[in-house]
Image (cartoon, rainbow, N blue to C red; front, side, top):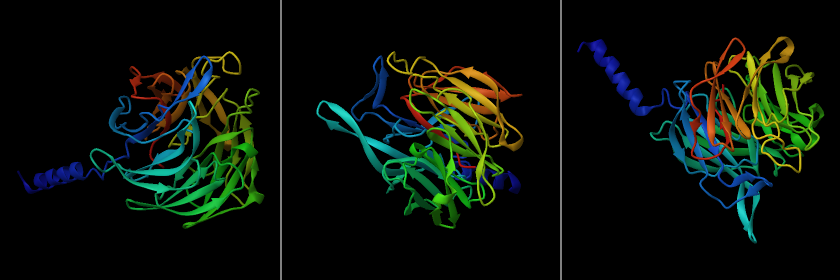
Amino acid sequence: MDLRSAFCATCLVFLTASGSAIAGTNDMLIGLDSKITYGPEGQTNGAPANDAVLVVDISDPAKPRIRASLPLTNSLLGPPTNLQITPDGKLGLVANSVIHVQEGNSWKAVPDDKLYVIDLTAEPPKLIDTVTVGRQPSGLSISKKGDLALIANRDGKSVTVVSIQGLTVKAIAEVPVEQQAAAVVIAPDGKRAFVCLNLANRIGVLSIDGEKVAYDKSLDIPSAFNPYNIDFTPDGKFVIASNTGAGKNNADAEVIIEATGPHPHVVDVMSPGIGPEGFAIAPDGKTAAAPLLLGTPAKDSDWFKTKTGELALMSIGEGGKLTVTARAPLGGLPEGVVYSPNSDYLYVGNYIDKDLQVFALAGGKLTEVGPKLKLPGQPASMRGPAR
């Protein structure tokens, strides 16, 4: 073996052993909730069971592969954005919104305050820390630099500021926002964040200076009913809030906000359909996707009318305008949605069906790829690396 071949072989052994060069950058996290089930009478809260967080390898985007399952508590009660991978792929952060406690013969969901820290460079990935954050942590967002995370707390009516230094994760501040906070997203330049104040039907604006985060109520942006999910276009020009309507009288909408300048403001509103709890913007910024609940699960006494959902693919045009270009059938209660790193595949988790659907994207169209991947539980949330 010549010197160059020996050097390359040594590099390969090192990269394979450490995993740090590739760990997590081609993974996604899926949170499984085994406590909440649905039947003819709707939602039932059960005893703490076999919740888990899956680490799924999508290096072959058409063939996702489960590479680890960690027995960690996760809940459907919260947006499907309570977890994310750092941009370097080294850590996975998972916030748990609620735990179940027994009350007589039934089980009640009460706020939790835990953030799980997963080392994705380990083989297999492992839990390395549990950090106390705000009450009922829901959506979270990791900065593009990977040194800061923000967590929207529902019961805490706050945003927790989290420092990330290597494999060390610490909660360093809690910023009051006066209202229940459902989801949050950090701008690509790391100088601002936007938070869904879902019960107030507003989007709050946070300024970021290093590890200092401040909320200015005067910058609140009126949104549609119940802003529940939120994401940024990669160029930082627009932030889009996904709104899930007002109970039985749904008025579901995507609200497009011009995110730059001293006063961010709404520039467009559109509706992709009923129940866009899941929402994500592609890494290349060309499309956005929303799994629509369409009223699932079935229940005769209220607005739940269908047994399956639908995936809406939208192009992002001039001024952030969204236009639906394709639709595809989904399973029961579709929640999380993730793009592949190259923006050419989409993954959607069906909560009731306990499976993952894979779609190829080409020319604004959706093509389902291969059989559905069966999961060992009900997928309540899904995210890939911060980008």
